Image (cartoon, rainbow, N blue to C red; front, side):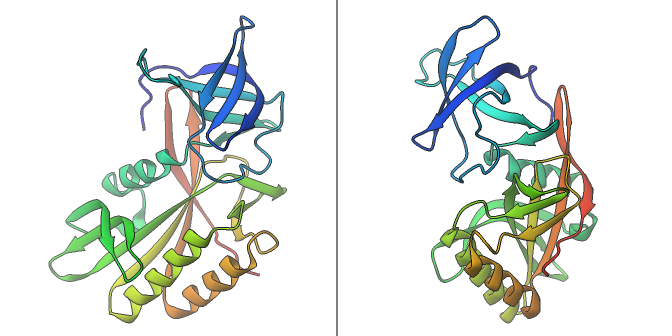
Length: 235
C-alpha cells in the first residue's frame, strides 16, 4: 500500500473518547486527531510515544488528521484498523497470500451468515467452493515476540468465528487472516486472559475446519505492505 505523502510525526499526549487523541507536533502545536481503532490499543497509548499522522487535506473535516502508526520500544505499529482489509485485499490481488491464490474474483464487504454479518473478502472461482475471508487487525504484544488478539473483549470477533464455522458446515471454505501491523513479533496467539471466550471459540473453529493465517506488515517511509507469514499458535 503506497502512501500519498509521508506521515507527519508527533508526540502522543492522550487518547480518549475511543476515537480521539491529543498530540503535539514538532513545532509545539497541539491538536486533536481521529483514532480509527475501536480496541483498547493495549501498549500503544502511553503518553510520550512517537506517532505518525496522515493528513486528509480536507479543511472542512472536523478532525483533519488521522493517527496511523506508533513507535513502541523501537517497533513500528499500525493502529489504523481500516487499513487491514485493504492490506489483505492488495496482498491477495498481488499473489502475496499464497494460501488464497487461484481465485478469479474477489469482492469486499459481502453480506453473509445468520447473524447479519459482512465478510471482509469473498473469493470465488467457477470450479472451487466460495472462500470467505475474515480479517483481524493485530497490534497488541505483551510478551516478547508474541502478538495477541483481541486487545479487548470482542463479541463481534466471536460472532464472526461462529459465522465462519457455519460456512465450513455448508461446504464452503472459511479463512481467518490476522493482519499483524507490528514488525517486532514472530507469532500470533489468542489473548485468553483478555477474552477467554474468543480463545475458546477460535480453537473450536480451527477444529471445525476454519483456516487461520497471520501475515506481518513491513513499514517503509512511503509504503505499508504484508511481507511475512508467521505462525498462529493456540497453546
